[in-house]
Length: 428
Image 1 (spheres, rainbow, N blue to C red):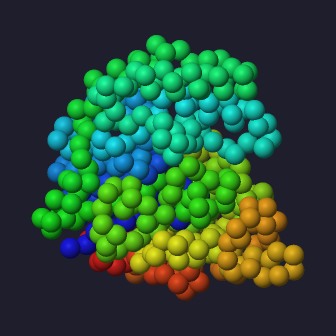
Image 2: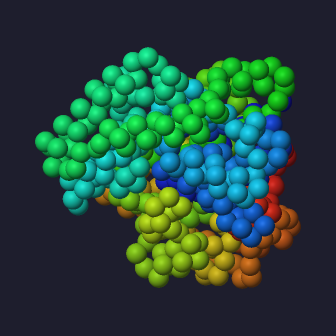
């Protein structure tokens, strides 16, 4: 039995949705373990683009059950629209989608505070999506959060009244922002009770039973390791742990559940929002990568910052996640470049760093040290056989594997689900 954890290992947007979509037919269950609708998965199926935010991309495969774990957070309108769009596209979610009853809910007051807080920071903005992610996870830690199971609790009205009073005080008195009306909160709850609550389940128990039956499970993360609240470029991070170990807490499965842990990275780097980015490019090469890679956020539409592959950050991700394999996406975007660079170390105050510094300011002040590689002629777009790879592309991949101390087990060579190259049978 092979159970797989799949995580992003850069700053998110690595193409996890497509990779999960590719691996899913070989699995029985796909389960998301953290994050919220701030994570967007864009997939191309038969030339048709599908964007998912809450629901794992395994839902696109008949017979594959999808779970949303307790470590995630849900927004009512967003997930209902997602469910409706899947149904309209001909995908069956009845009996295929299960949402943990312990999942916390994003309320309208979370979104209002998130936006007001970010706006008040001016140039010091973190770069939040404004989806209410941070405030929702804060409420979870502060023990005032509302979970899917709490919709049927006897004291739900009292708790909501107390929460709304607290948030409106913050909005009114501190941020000088409009208050949230209880009617909006009640509308959100009504939608959740009507459309989402019927999908609630004890996800932990269901996953345990599936393991006992010998079923194959795929645990899916959101964002990327460099946005992990503990191991990323703090404070320019998300509000949850994106590391592979979070799968166990975010789904309620045992620590020995996973047998393979794969990290997904682009053949270059991107980042959305503020924060350090040592390999960022501000020249025509950066523009080339952004335009050819269509680097715009699936959730926000914001243009992504682009840069060379950062092997220091990826090596950090290999160690923290305990990766058994790397999956490199968007290799085809590098087609046509005469020179390709890998960042192998940083230089800070005259010293060489081979690790990611704890201070964001130190990382921001670090200079990327590069190793150069020759580009290749011709196209890698859509290639599926390793024998067809240009020798220069193979040399680049060999270097990534060696520098990051982890084998490359799969390549993505285009946006469609068929544009993949399997370099190992461990994921099948």
